Image 1 (cartoon, helix red, strand yellow):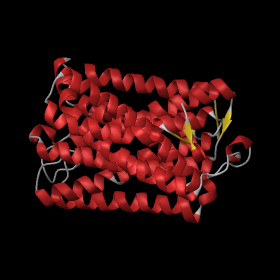
Image 2 (cartoon, one colour):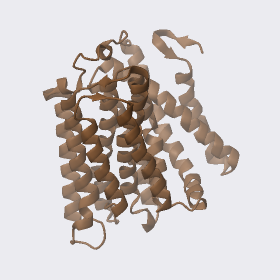
Image 3 (cartoon, one colour):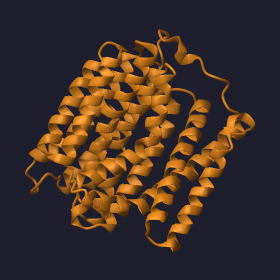
Length: 362
């Protein structure tokens, strides 16, 4: 594939407009198998292009601020998709935000982290990372996930696994405050917690950063790709829902599919970083996306649904609660020593496999 000046592959520039052409064609072509396949192909292409452009921007910005670029961008996709589907759906969509956020936590903390540790361990044996940064992220993640996804099950202000209006507002504000303080710690006050400590020397061996014009082009292309991903995923979601229902899977499977779609760019970037022996960057990406998924999605969804006065179900079930507790416990043990091998990666992937299996069979 020919490459344009300053390391921008040509395909990353023509894929975004191609995705928009498919999106425009879908408005007139109706719903049929060929159009659905084209939308899925365009969606995959837009995701791959978004990954590349986000990495260019992140490389220019530097660590750890660069890892926030993709996390925030992916969360914007997630919020837009959740809100658009929930507002246009019926009462059965009241739990979509809960299902998607919980799926994002499980995909990130077990699927993406497990895959990164396994790939890095297979290629490099043991890998090092900063314990202080990883533990800081995990502590905030534990607080956010329990307060927003478990606590509604034990409150009696309203019937069901839901918050009252005042409780929902408090949960949204506290989530935003926790995430904001974490970002401040990560990027300003204790920035060194999220940088390599030098043990894995490969972490700081970067190529020359891209030029400012290239970064601007990539930033604009990233925005175009992300908007295309949102709209293409929205067009594809009815077909996904039909497939889920035809397979006899529960409604929560729709949330899993949505979370998997929006987390694909970040998962790919994290896996590539781990394979390149940059585990610190990989964990920054993975844990940062999980934090953004709760810390930004819950406040936004809460504000929208308080405004429109529609029901919002947030409490997860007993099986999901057990899996969440197991994930946090194993994650704490994994991140306790600052060194990982393929064993930790295999354990997280086993939990992720259990989550996927139990989600469609329980």
